[in-house]
Image 1 (cartoon, rainbow, N blue to C red):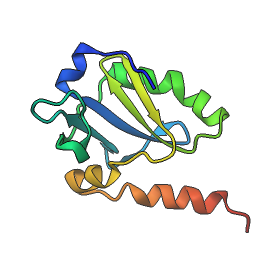
Image 2: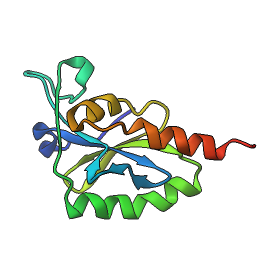
Image 3: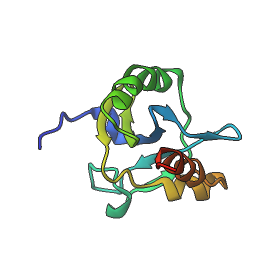
Length: 125
């Protein structure tokens, strides 16, 4: 896999969790994390020593969600993690969008609950 290098990624990225093409928001708190790089590493991976904080979700970020959300739903992407730098989507994590536990702990909110309810609603009765 090849990926364009984005110089603005030096300041980290935002992993924003989408459920059915929309951000998961509870009590005004969004399921997202800002991932910052470890010293001497170009990746923002938490498991590689990166750190996490609560991101500011900008209008630009929400515009990205509005643009890609319907296509994700159309393609059957139920729960994804968008990795966003500035106004670009670096990656769409569709198989294992990790980091939601960090978002839960930092925001003191259970973002998993709406995911479980949405899964339950998809199951045949």
